[in-house]
Structure formats: structure tokens, C-alpha cells
Length: 361
Image (cartoon, rainbow, N blue to C red):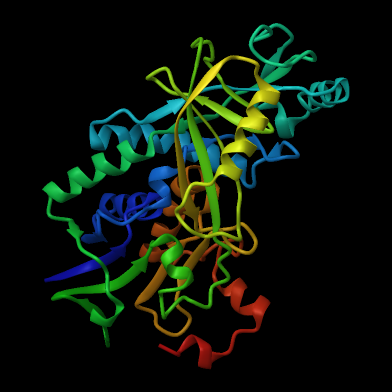
């Protein structure tokens, strides 16, 4: 069997990139062991144009957010499922100074598109928000497990999905591509999350900085939130009346065990935000494929042109994937230059990586 692209991994990156390639008329096989623990399936799927501890505009927001708002409804139509949930975000102020600063920022072109308004009364009985807050538009979340499962069902029915564990020992590089278990392909693209940070002999020189994240599912006594809430932690209301609360960042203990420390940290932050009675229903954890500069890793291997990577989307994968998957598809199909912001060649320059490392298999 001869195809154009083998895609290793069916998390957010592999799903959205393979869809773009299929849409462009290319033949694809997506390899994923459906028993593998994937951080994509644990992530809350939030997209938010103004975020972080310092509440600043997300990197490349003016590119990313128009792209994602166009992409996900199209992708829903392809899969036949509803997983894209635009939802305004309410950010309570913790001081008069913050209120004044953001009211001034709202008049600037950089932020005007994303700030819907201000309120001193919204959730005044539910949140600890004596200074009111601002409403951010363009935000929301994607039900990632539903998105991944519905896409997998679709491509499996078309014969484009391979439910298998990818073993590098079974991959052969050929003069005109690669071969894996009888499948010949022009290129293989690794979208395997944290797997590339340690297990991938071709790309283990990339400077991944994996981060463990934990979140909670809670049930508040009253179902009052119609917005996401963000201050110190985020509270994300779900269609079933529960809320997700997150998230922690731990780059020391990279395992899939939930911790009491993370639970207590999240509950402490949540209780600073709201005084509503609640019940904790569940605690989830995953390891995000973050990078040294918090920018994705895209590109062809500098020595082996038949190998490529689309990875390192980190905690903002839902926001990053639509724009950069489309961009990388254009790079692969047309020879369009790859944006230096995400090009893996930056890692070679920064760490002065030599050819003997790049060719060591």
C-alpha cells in the first residue's frame, strides 16, 4: 500500500493536521493505540484570547482566534457531532487598580476586539468580586474527547485509522519515503505528544519541557454560571451542570497520578473566587507536550526529509492547532516557507546541535 502521509498520534495535533491533509486530497493513515493515555483527552479544551497570570493577550491571538472560530464549526460538520462551545469569559477584578487598568485597555485596538464589556453586578452573589469584572469574548472550549472520538469513528470507517502501537524498530527509511508494516508513505509526521520528548530517536533533540497538569470536576450547589470564570484559576461550566476547575502546572513529577497537593491548591484558589458550596466529583491529570519557549515544534527533519514533526502545542493546543495545521499543510504541499516562530531549526541554532546528534538513531 502506498500513501502520502503516515501520522503518528491522534491527539489534537494529529487529528487536526490529518484532517487538513485529507481535505487537501492527500492519502493519510493515522496511527494510534486507543489504550494510550493522552493529555489531549484530559485537557479542558479552553480557548481564551486574554489569559495567564498577568492577563495578557494570547501569543498570536489575532491569527489564531479567527482561524479557530472558522475551523471548528467546519470540523463539527465533517464529524456530525457538536463539540465546539463558544462561551464568554468573566474575569473578576481583585483590586480597583485592575479595574481602572482594564477599562483603559479596552479602548486600545490591541484589546478592543476581545473585551465585550464590564459589569459590577454579574455573579455578585456568587463570586468574591467587589470590584466587578470584565467580559471577554471570543473564548470558550472544545469537548476534546468527543472531537477525537467522532473523528476517529469517521476515519476508521473510511479505512484511514490504524489502531496500533507505533514501534520505531518497525520503521524503515527508504530512498523515496518510509515504510511501516507494509505501508509505504512519502512522509511520516510525528504528532505523538510527549512521546517525542524521549522515545523518538529522530526528534529526541528537540527541547521539550513536559508539564503535568491536574484539574477537578465539581458540582456547585447552584447552577448559576453561564460564563467561564477566570481569576487565579478557571471555572468552566459544562452542559451537564458540572464545572471543570483548573489547572495546575508541575514540571517535576511527570506521572499520571493525581495528587492531594494539586487538589488542595485548586480548591484553595476556587474558594478565593467563589463561596458557593460544592462537591468534588473527580480529579484528572495529563502531561502536556510543552516546549522550552512555549512555541510549537513544526518542520522537516534537517537530515531526513521524509520525517516531519507537528508537536509541542502544550496547554493551548486547541487554540494553536487550527492555524498551524493549515499553515503546515501549505508548507508540505506547496513549499511555502515555514514560519520561523515555530520552525524546529530554531532549536538547532539555540543549542548548537551538531549533525552527529541529528543522525544518531
